Image (cartoon, rainbow, N blue to C red; front, side, top):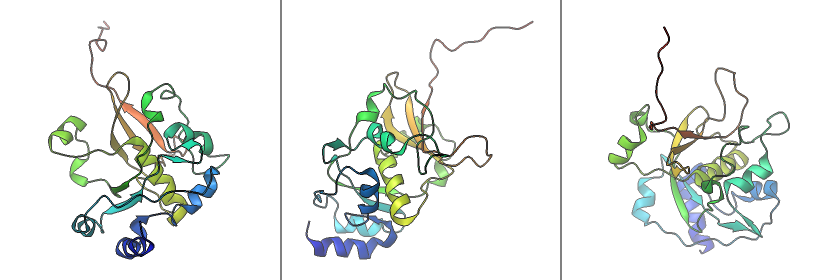
Length: 208
């Protein structure tokens, strides 16, 4: 992509733009290298102009040097202990054998909403998908979260979870986010959870 196009997009989106320059602080923290390729724009100007207020325009990279951009490798860098360094991932390991954490980003641009949609709160993901919501991938959410932290000192979905398009091996829906627990019970960390669906193994017993 030409530099003039990048500059135009940066001017259009302002602090909602995460391009090659904005990724530099994150790349330095990752320590995987700084040589990256900028993909061509995959949205029309009409689409972009309609999204400048509520969406981030994020440049996705499938790899940096010899490292794949996926949740496993990001977790390896950022760790799971906020007492050691922040930002970090929330300390849990249930997903370490799940396929979705090895799913890389694509070499493309993404439009990703910054704030949760109020009408979607406490609505089951199946209903939201039936209503034509398009969930992002867990790796896109994680990549955007850490990029915003280092570039703009921003805190995406700081107290909210967001549904993802990924599922675990049982087909349970992945949701991520909620870096900070307002009740102070859990430590800080970018969370990766799964929404357990009701199956035959869930049942009840009486207690008399």
